[in-house]
Amino acid sequence: MDNQNDNNISSDSGNDIKPAPAPSKIFGIISMVMGILTIISCGTCGILAIPGIILGIISRRKQEEPKAFAIVGIITSAVGIVVGILFLVLGGIAFVAGYLNM
Image (cartoon, rainbow, N blue to C red; front, side):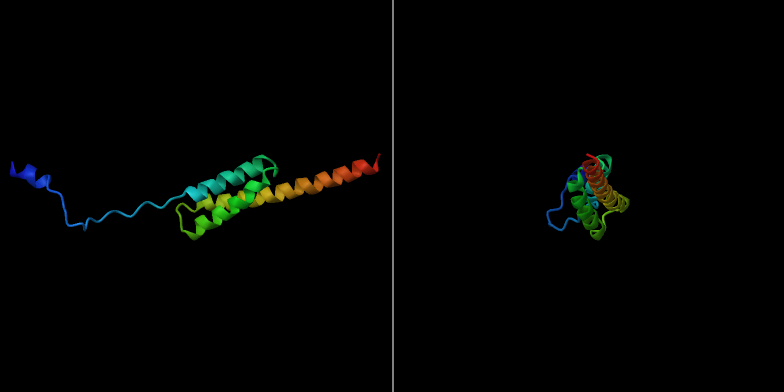
């Protein structure tokens, strides 16, 4: 009977040690998703690439684990920007070439 009462006693000293929260990886995941969406849309959603790069850098600086999400987010966002610029330049060239052949 005494054992049950001992187990139910709570510490009221206020010095309870709480474990540290697990590191969040949400910025890295959001960065990766934005970069992938930019690539899938062939750069037409290039507006997502810049926040993707920024969130990836923030995630890397905060030492969020795993860092792979942040790295993939930065790379895919950068590739999305390059693809978007490439489509813009090729579209402009095609437009000018079509205009000159009229």
